[in-house]
Length: 205
Ligand code: MG
Image (cartoon, rainbow, N blue to C red):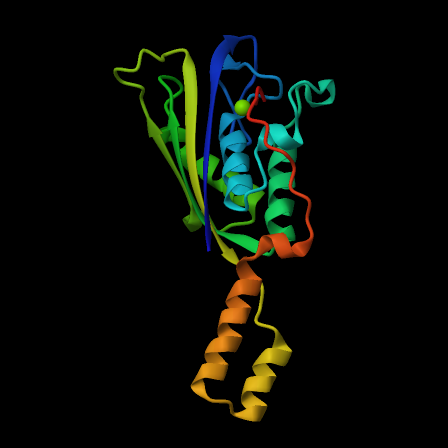
């Protein structure tokens, strides 16, 4: 299993559509950013990439690149999903905290959970989204997202190794050896020959 942590913040600005968790929300202000400002999808993307040590959102989508201007953040999320699948992992569950003064999250949390579950191909019961007000933080004009994601390996034990155990009826030490090899195969993501991008935390997305 792997665990990933994501964080993002954006400032509210007038005249910008508000999109959080891929959900369009009726609100007088939106979140300013190089992309569509969807801080929840940015934090989820970072949590997924972090869980497989693949860098962060800025690694894949540098804010200096004009082609990501106004980009739909579901594109960033899809890339992160591909990255975790590439190294043999899938999401178990995700827990999110959104911190903002307005809009209130609780009335829209059910719709947001449904949208995020759909984007992540998860059962809605494996998606948690909680809303908090930034009391004492003097951050009324800012939205903040924290995300934790748990991944599990989707690699199945090598069939030949399992058959070898059954055919040869080896002793307990042999079985332990095979099992530890399987476990090592499942967690050594560097063995897949994937070139990890260099880290770039200068994320303005
Ligand atoms: Mg962002």
